[in-house]
Image (cartoon, rainbow, N blue to C red; front, side, top):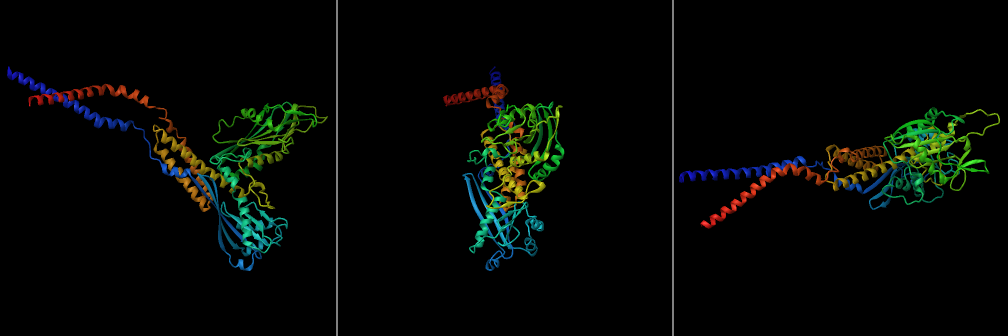
Length: 559
C-alpha cells in the first residue's frame, strides 16, 4: 500500500510539474512571440519624413538675382570711364517682411561698350527701327535685362523722353545730365528700370500675401488669381430678353484673334482651356435705378457685389472644374431696362461700362442702340462689336492675373506689346511673383502637413506620400537656389514641380484612413479577442506563484 501511495504521489507531482511547465510555456510564448507579433502587425506604418528640412523651409530667405547688362553707346561716357569697360558691379538690397520671411534683391549688373552692329543700330532715327536691328541681341534669357545708354544728343528718342522700355527684355536710357558722377546717375536709372521690368516690393509682397498680410486698405480689388497648374476661361453671353433682342457674337473668331495670342504667351505659367456659352433669360438679379435726367438706368457701385451671385448660379462651370475658372460675361440689357450704365463710387459713369471681381472674372454691359421709328418688328438683330468687347475683357484678364504696370520711372514710355498682348518683361515680372508665391505655398503646405502628422499618431504615412514630400522639399530648395543664381525659367519650373508634389502629399486619401480610429475602439476590438486567452494563463501563473511561496514556507518549517 505504501508503495502504491508513493507511486500515486509521484504521478501527481509529475502532473503538477507538467501543468506548471505548460502554463509557463504558454505565458512565455504569449509574451515573447505573441505580443511582439501583435504589436508589429497592428502598428501604424509611418514612413520617415524630412522634418528638419521642412522646418528650415518654414523660414524663407529669398534672394532674387536679376542679370542685367548695361550697354554704353559711343560718346556716352567720359574717356577715363570708358577705358574701364567692361566690368561688373552688383547692387543688392534686403527687404525684411517678417521674422520668417525676407527678400534680398540682387542685380548682377555688367557694363560694356556697344558693338559695332549695336552702334549702327542705335544711330537710327527711331526706336522701332532700332528695335528691329537689336532684336537678335534681345533674345536674352528669361528674367534678364539689357539696358542701352545713348548720348544726350541722340535722335533715337524724342528729346522729352528719358527712358524707353521695349516689349522684349530691353530698354533705352538717355545719358544723365551734368558732368558729375555719370556711373552713379546711370546706376540710379538702372535700378528704376529694373524694378519696373522685373519685380518690386509691392509685387513680391502681393505674392507673399498669405505669409505677409497686405497693409494697404482697399488692396483686395487688385488681388490676382492664385497660382495654379491650369485655368479655365469661360465667355458667356447673357440675353435676358430674347423676345426683343436676337444677339449675335463672333466669339470663336474673337478668341482666335485676341485671346489665343495672350494665352499662348501665358502657356509658360499654366494650361488654359477656353469655352463659351449663351444664356437666355439670365437677369442680373439687381433692379437698376432709373435716372430721369439721362433717361437711362443706373447700376451703382454698391449694388455691383449683388450682381454676381444670381448670375453665377446660372453659369454652372466652377462646380465641375478642376481648375480656377475665369468668367467673362457680356450682358445685353433687357428692353425694359435699356440703356443701362455702371457708375463708380463717385457717381461718374464708367467709360468701359464694365467691372471686374477679384479672383472671379468680369462683367460688361453692352447697350443696344435705341430703336428708330422704322424698327417695329421684334426681335431686333444685334451684332456685337467684338473688338470693343475684347479690349475690355483682355484688360480684365491681365488684371486678374496680376499683370499690372510697375513703378515706371518718370517720363518713361512703353512700347505696345502688339498682337501678343503681353511684353516679354511683363511675363518675366509675372514669373518672378508666381515663383515666389509657389515656394511660399509649398512651405506653408509642408509645414501644416508636418504639424498634422506630428500631432496625430494614427495617420498612416505611406512610402509614396513620403516620396512626394521629399520631392517637394528638393524642388523647393532647387527653386530657391535657381532664384539666387538668376535662372528664372528653371526656378519657376522647379517651383511648379514642388507645389504639385506638396499638394499630392497633402491631399493623399491614405492620410485619412485611420484618422478617426480612437483608442477606445481599439480596446473594444482587442479585449474580446485576448481576454478569454489571457485569463487562464494569468490564473495559472498566480496559482504557480502561490504554490511556490507555500513550498518555500514548508521548507523553512522543516529546517
